[in-house]
Amino acid sequence: MAKIRSVVVEGNREQGYKRVQVLFGTDSFLEITDNQGRIEFLLGSHHEAFKADGSEAKGQLHTIVKEIMERHPETIFKEE
Image 1: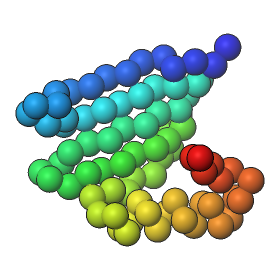
Image 2 (image 1 turned 90 degrees about the vertical axis):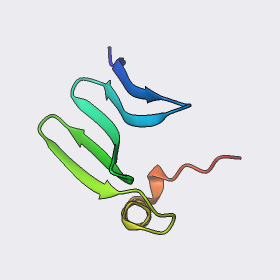
Image 3 (image 1 turned 180 degrees about the vertical axis):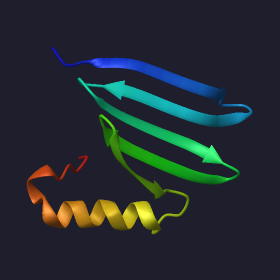
């Protein structure tokens, strides 16, 4: 059965988080890292992943998310 296998958090709310990593399913992962004030977003499966800069509201990560939504509209999630 697929599940969240591991959650790693480096840092804290008061001093700032440096890295958050989640391993899930059989071979998927998500990692968010503060790299000298730039936010790196990494999402992958097994040994393949993509990395995007998530530092700005309308930046690289936003553009990639919009592209995925346009190409795969059945995956769109809207919070109510």
